[in-house]
Length: 562
Image 1 (tube, one colour):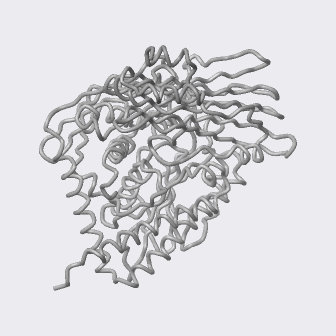
Image 2 (cartoon, rainbow, N blue to C red):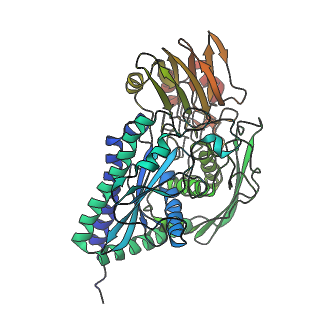
Image 3 (cartoon, one colour):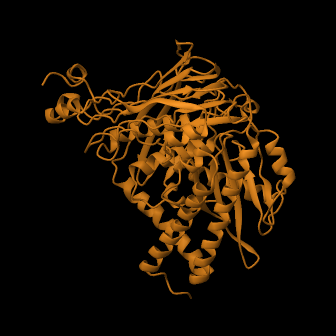
């Protein structure tokens, strides 16, 4: 009979596993070629169970939506190996997969998975996801706003071995390179993604050698059990009841009508049940969400509410999500899905926040900006004699909460990725940022106002290019809570020959031709306000006006005369 793990050893092992993921994240970003990974950190790494792919650990710098999704893609690989649909692994093998319907998000989020071997058996899997700037398809960058089938969005890869016994398979790589833009630059990201897994395997081997495989296995099981217990304890503190909310997607990019996310959350005992059955039917355009992304969106929203619960598969056990069959939140092939991870996922989280703020108002914020601001610009740079694909993501305002105002220009709800520095973008692409500033006045009024979004304008300096957008919150601003007002909507204006063009779908359009001197102006959403604006401290209103966040007229209109 083995000696039970003491609390100190368990804590050290927990921190060590998270550190493995942190080092993978750091390696990935430092070695990557693309600014979206190297600068914006649009990537994530995790450790997953050899039995069912369930999440064991993630780092503090990983995007939650990726980490949650990867347990489903890892599980799919394990199942496909077991039933012969996928080649069995050998030491040094790394699988690549981006198929949304096999536990994924959209095609640009490319996942690698590598088994970790101990004594001739798989001990666990390491997996990571990186956002590739292009994956082929009808438009540069992959964000096809008017796609009606997934094939129009890019190259779809089932799980295949990209690395075999530690060596890159030239044939698989050639297939990938032949189907994407700027293919010669992707090899840097591929090698960085693989290097991150190799570093993780080396660090994990050191922990296993130090403590022993049996001890680590026992610790993993205990950490999962404790995470489940902690989440159940947090849920048990909530009064029993059912709370309902509604969130809206502006349109699907093809049919210019809103999509509805209708949510009912039932709390009973120590579980939460999420029912999206009243949501809109599958849509024509690319704003469908695959099941793995829908589930991960619920998990990350609850993670925002109870951030002290350690992240592992155990934390998800008390969260029961009814499969939303027949809705756009359970996309099946061949529905297009390019907007699911970056946009629909955040509307799902917003619906969770809007329902849960009724139950635990002291723990939930008003809605954050809720858009990744996906802007892709692809073309040819004559000065460098080569093509380019720029991908810009943007922050926005966070919602106010019971204690303070919302964060200004925060990262997206689904992760910690940030806007790449403008100096890096101007060096890498033939563009100039005409301005880059806070979007004053965009925060929703409330006792605690929402944070402010971002305002920027990009000018094409040379060559020709095509612009595409898949954003959201252009029709409806982020929801206020408990009497707070909504944040400002997302805005997009394309200036061609000095003439402004606003997309018919407000923040979704593709293939807009641009030439030197043409500009793109974007205003990202502000966060929703929390509580009655009339209750706001007059001193805080005066401070906001003095700082230029609101004009005196805006302040009087939104908060009332003081």
